[in-house]
Image (cartoon, rainbow, N blue to C red; front, top):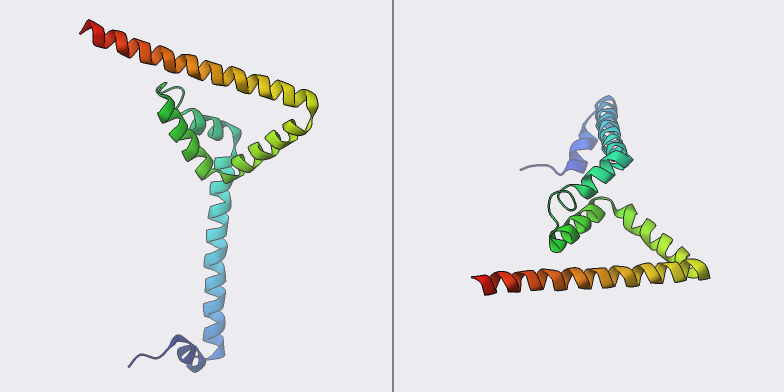
Length: 130
């Protein structure tokens, strides 16, 4: 019959328990340093831009693929979404910035609609030629 871990550790001498704790602390310290290094590498601006642009803008101009890449990027970098939310709320508080932001948003919507219409019409022409 196996003993529960608490009963097992009570039976160990204090010096062995101390060594186990020191080893556990060392392992956790190494894991923490590795996590910090990975985070530091992923936060560098060049890496962020490369990851944001890889496959979405440079690879293809498919809007659905671009949106999925952007969502994947924001999932791996959650602070980007909170920063963007803060920037948008700050812009919406200022009157001049709000008017510029709404104009840019309208231009983006019009540009997206024109792109969608162009794609639809080009597919339509390709079907008519066939």
